[in-house]
Length: 257
Image 1 (cartoon, rainbow, N blue to C red):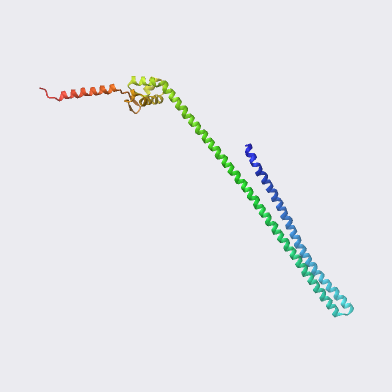
Image 2: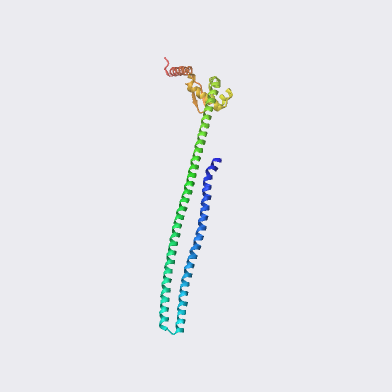
């Protein structure tokens, strides 16, 4: 748990820094929007001032000319004042337009840089997140592999323990089972279990191992849950009995002299 917290600390710090940068970005955009509105208002005011300045100049000059009685001079001064005012107004408009366009370019450049920085930050955060997820998956896989290996070893130990117990029980009870099977000759596993004091499953397992390992049991017969102990002498006796039966049958079918 402590290691997970230490791993998450850089990610949390980076996230907090990204939030602070984003808030500063929003505040800058609000200020820039306010500055842009103020610039536009200023341009409109200047244009209105220029138009307002031209008209009083013409009126004033016209009034003075009428007072002196010089209509030609009044007209010439009025035209010169109007042209000069128009020229100044156009120059001011051009200057204000250039200033406005330069400001717009600066805003776009700043905005592009800001967007690029935000993209880099998002990319960095995404890389950190993916790295964290990959690390978590790696740790989860390692924990799973460790748990599976632990369970495999546990199963292996259980198998080895059971095998050791089986060998120990066989060594301890095989002679008793063999003696009971010989004595009973034909028996079920329940009867053999009662004779040996073992459960039927363990008695059967020991007897089957005797049939595989002990020569005196290699001729024995199984039929389901029943066992018949057969020896060489039994087969010889059966063969002899079969011969006697054959001879008896032959004597019965031979014609009498």
